[in-house]
Length: 502
RNA sequence: GUCCCCAUCGUCCAGAGGCCUAGGAUCCAGCCCUUUCAAGGCUGAGACACGGGUUCGAAUCCCGUUGGGGACGCCA
Image (tube, rainbow, N blue to C red; front, side):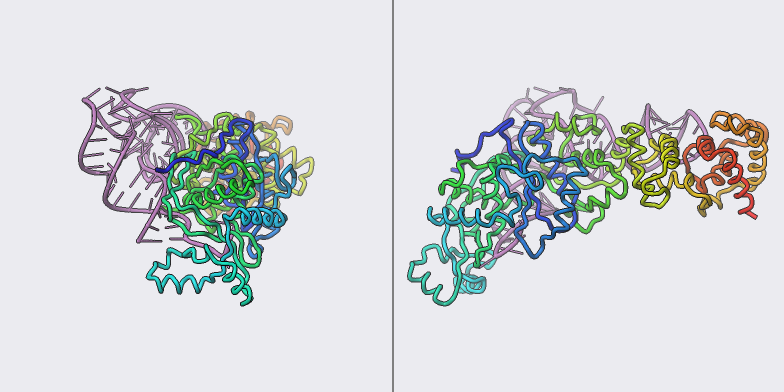
């Protein structure tokens, strides 16, 4: 009869310690971000601690660049940590590549406790034995070296072989209560004794991950569903760790649903939607992206899905997370982001679009005082009409260039009487004094000349002016745009379009 | 092949036995507002995978089927 190990932690509230422990390989992925977010939110909600550790145990794939990107990502997202890389803490160091001495000590304790043994079998030998015994190859290792005598070990050593170390896994069912999925049982014998330290002494992930969790006092392991099957191995290692006196409690586990891409497949690292920095370049705010990601498996209320990070923290509980895999929907993510953009204070919004204008070469870096003034004045015109901060250059670009870049569709959409409209407009605008060139005055003058005077529908009347001013069919509100440009520049642009059409 | 997980509108989420003629968001369609586009408002289309139980009563509990996903390394 399966039962939960009584040594499982009962930590709650401020005793909760969670960790985020990525390996520095490749670009930060949105799935990774959601894992970090839920860990962080759980810690913050409960007043517990968030530990940020780096699992750089694979020298071949890890890179310093990737490590820096991870830091950049979390800092941009405002996901902070109480202990870990950069900030230090009582369990430093927090990069596994700097903890080898610790792993050696733990291995010695496990060896002394008799729960780990030396294994000399090579992969080829294991395969050969399986074949000879009519045992399926997928079953893997056959626990051959479990009871090697000292003489046998000496003989292998004499051949120049170095042992790998394997954990003697318990021959009984392993049960735990998943924080998201409830009770889960792995039947006895579903996996063989596994290697924890490679021949040559390099410790493996299957070893260092639980060891660090134990050493760092992690109470709640919240990770991706893809790691769920390895929980059986972790549990068996944990028991060994307790038996060997390395730790005295076993953490609780919660497995978050996968983030899917198109169809039913896991969101690929190659999928552009998965690339955190690409999403940032497109113009996601950290608030919007985090809000959307939180929606993948969780909700704050039945009838609401836009919320602040503070609200998320106040409401979050890992037990409320839905176990279903969720698809990343770019459209909805952008819609949520648009809501967050609209929630921004005007000055904050203006500041946030600056990097995008700079990137497009529309303003200098940093912008001049004059450019700052223009950005601040123009920002309110576009804040509610963009789902992404990256839409700013297209919408506001016309304000920062001397020559209007006419879009093809804008030109071709011009009515036949465009010149007539512009000429009439110029007449109406010329009489407005420089100091009274305001949106309200412009609207009065243009409505009088075009809508009443020429009897045009507003859509027809203002279209040519919009193209003359912005070069586009879609732009910020016309009169306000003209006010920002000023009388002289506005008239110059109207004239320029007429010339351009000749 | 073995083990594990999952199953409500196209998508995401709500629903922990009667409040469900299943609710919200997104997307799509239409209307309103309107100087374009948005935003905003309104309306509409759209789902409990299937089959058995349990129960007076099931989207909700149990079993099975089907479907999907994940894991099975001296990778992480």
